[in-house]
Figure (cartoon, rainbow, N blue to C red):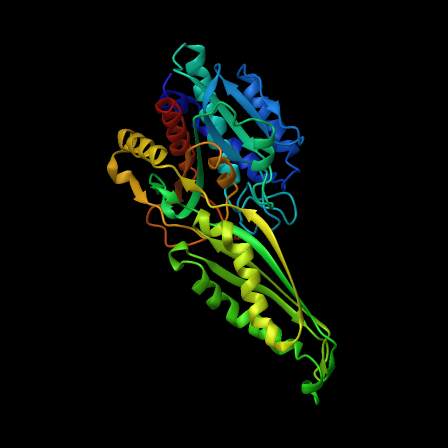
Length: 386
């Protein structure tokens, strides 16, 4: 049975599954209902899924000695769902605003189609389905999959991600870095404090903090090759409580992102030096806490070439769009450090739509025709790889 034949009888069911998941979102490492739903569907198809050691997420082999992996992520985001649709989230303050319900449904549908091929003796090699938890957390649930040994023996790995800037029926592909490394940095400054009438008798902590926030992004871009796409943005700055007191402490918190894997390795030491250099003339104490997030997703050329052939065979070359590099983080980057692979962008925007709703927004939704497109893509990639 081909993917098209499978979808002829199951496309409507996949829409139901996606809407069920959308209405019952779960945060990272809490995806118990989602794990159960996926596991039950795979078990009903005669497969033997196994839950990951963390207790959420699961993997499932189709055939023996799997060499190709298909990965989906299960978790939702801690934001409200503000859409007026029948499948609106029933969990207050939690929503599938990044399309993980779509990713899960697509890989589940692909797995069920591949299971039928295996039962008919038409599966050329084993395939492993990977439904990982906690992609939205730092450093990401992908690391648990790796620690459990679930990438062992795989030679290629594929995933997809919803792209609301691309029309349904189009697939975005890119060789090399398609997402960014995403880290967190906290800078704590300390000083003796004092009266604003006599800043020369103390350390002007607020000025020091302002200098760090204002100057560090530009200086960092002079210490790291700008072609690496380094991007430091501060999201929280706080110091002091009243107008006439120089405070004793201040804090700046932000994110630093970079597209280049080698530059990512150097970032903590370089950023620490930049901040110390800026703050030093002010006579304040400086503590930099650098928190690793996720590496960039670096798509292997061979895997992207395979996807280009697959998309061309399935829908024609016009279905391919060149995916833009994103400064968003994606923990699939940990996996493709272990196994060559590629992340594709799945178009989810209705053609001709003037509505632009980005990922991580409370009104995010998709044109559900993307589900069948995604299933066909994953099935074809799994069959062509190996």
